[in-house]
Image 1 (cartoon, rainbow, N blue to C red):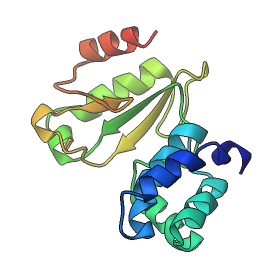
Image 2: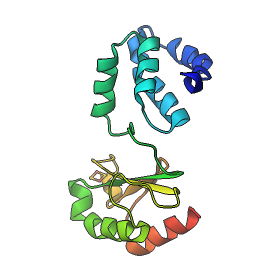
Image 3: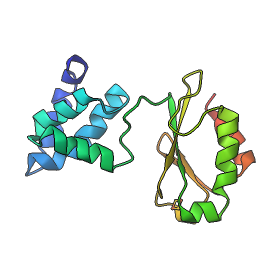
Image 4: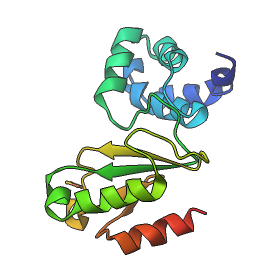
Amino acid sequence: MGELASLDPEAQKILAKYDQKRAATLPLLHLAQDKVGCVTPEVEAWVSKWTDVPVVRVREVVLFYSMYRQRPAGRHHIRFCTTTSCVLMGSEKVLGYLKKKLQIENGAVSADGKVSLEEAECLCACEMAPMMQVDGKYYGDLTEKKVDEILEKLK
Ligand code: FES
């Protein structure tokens, strides 16, 4: 857990905010994912150590929330909404274009390691459908032209 040991001071600060250690499970997972790039078995064990939540329960949390990645992401990570409102507003066409442009499918990283793509359930921004997140920032009313502009900015 060498890489994670550097996060111990930050973990202590996070734990101090909560009455119960287990309440820190989600922020600790975020902290470690940001450092490591994804949630590995080592990350799960590290979170378990700090929260006293059994590793199997930490694993269940990771599997439940789509915001936790189990594989490394690219330098920029795209989460593309594939739920009803976005589909009704044309997301399938835009997503198809994005995949073609990046030459990757869901869950993959582009050959240059720059961009990863994840299809996601509703990202709670239905009013801007079709939409996606890039590194946590929301982009809506997507068209093929807008996708081109957004990807251009990532260069
Ligand atoms: S359905 Fe796409 S953000 Fe809600």
